[in-house]
Image 1 (spheres, rainbow, N blue to C red):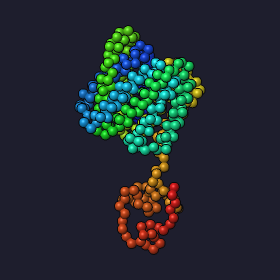
Image 2: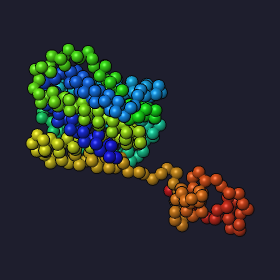
Image 3: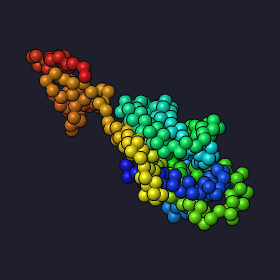
Image 4: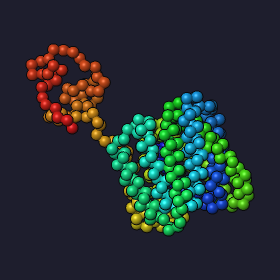
Length: 337
């Protein structure tokens, strides 16, 4: 949870930096500069921690997530936000966590927990409210909307591809080589970056470097650390806290006072994240007449509440006592939950 919180805060801060750097760098140049700065920082961490190349089994996931998430996603997002207003971009890109839940439930066999789906629905509604309330009435071209949809799809695909790689590689390895893969994919924008760095103010270049070191190198590493320890669906739902934090950061850093609908939308986003993190009733649990559940309490030796063996316990064979069933349990009725 701490690692996920670091990721969410840094990704929210990225939107404030992108607004400044994006005025002076083209989409491809900004993506390349960000990825180069992140790659240098991550390479230094690899040397300090003495982590070499990841195992061969991790490379397919690293390559796919690096190409889609670090490469295509960043260019498509930067480009799309130049063609549509900020509110529309926020609404369209926030389809990403829902796609993550669907893809991970299908491809990674994570299933579709009801609490996760309910939380996603609440958070997405909040993101829509935030997007509408922050829209400045600017133009929203079809091309811009399609680019934002491409960003959402590549973001979701990159996360689902990275999850299996983390079973073989460390979070730092998965992030570092994924970032380097994205940087290589963006090398065609080298001449744009070289020409625009000289004309851009120092603050814009500093924001680009900040994007590479903190929202990319650090935040993507803490993301991978958290993703290795939970499901992709839950991690995707956690990112719905970003719109709420962006509202607060814009208020504090840029003096943009949010309206009441914006604050309500941010509250819905956070509420949805809380709902998605809750655990529902376990599918196998049964309520036993007289109290307790058939799942038991997992006591030592495999014993459970009300004399019902816990999951994984080895049953002991003995002759039934009077009034017991052949399984050795009291002859009483059990009702399904």
